[in-house]
Image (cartoon, rainbow, N blue to C red):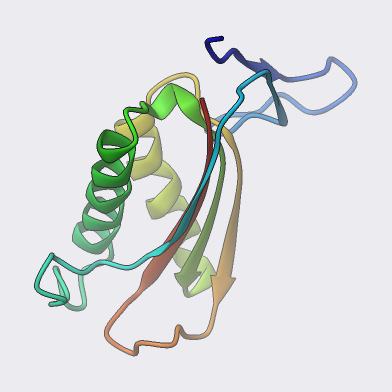
Length: 130
């Protein structure tokens, strides 16, 4: 059985830009992607002090997991991003839109004062249904 992930944006809620209010999935396999940091495969921070480059690296890391489980961005039903500094939320949203396109999953972006690894400005986890 193949997965169907239906994006839901009820008329009774505000019109979204950059995320979907809810996702209904008929997928039979769920993949929980741990919070991805802006690290390369040698555990080195990519883009120190550069939120845009760190965000792009995090999305590359998530894409690596998607490729490994034979999934695509369309199979991602939920993202949660933690970004240092609430003023940076729009930067993350912009890059997410560039990477994922016009049919984004449900998501949450949280502005925080810091992450467990001080050189990291962003961490994103994902839920995938396929």
